[in-house]
Length: 197
Image 1 (spheres, helix red, strand yellow):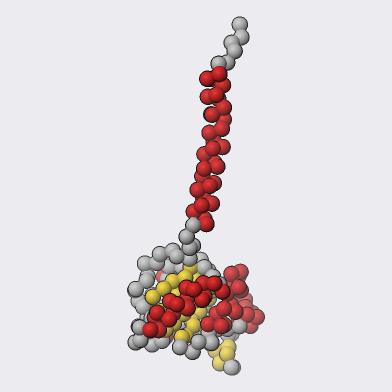
Image 2 (image 1 turned 135 degrees about the vertical axis):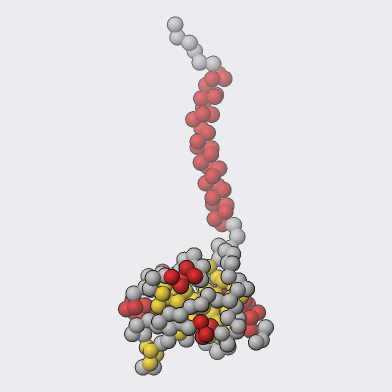
């Protein structure tokens, strides 16, 4: 004898089959909402207000400016002037996009731009700077990535603004863009410049 399924049993089976789809759609919607909400560059940094990590790195082997080697990074050089500390690499696609903006920023003689070349081959780093320009007063070769870890780098590129005393005043996660250069980075630099010595 065959039994005919009741309407209640049939509706229950439909819900059991649709439940995974409903959960998936809800999670996808939540993910997309969180992805679009807020500023992804606003990740917190425990280093804000702290002295910059002690960093001594050699320059990029073979990198020259006006026939002289471009210096590496020495912690002492991160004091005395407002410094924009940029973490970059030749293999980093967004670094190519931010390069002309860094060149524009380097025209401001009130600040010094220092680069940390992250996990890169010297020859590739030199080709990158020859192609896109070299805005860096100094740039250290962080071949193993150890200095990047000490700076709390999430990924490349990242940019820090350091006060004259070597304290980290601001951190921008992600590339410098035309929009955030004018609306975020330059105002943060101006705040630090306004504080004097």
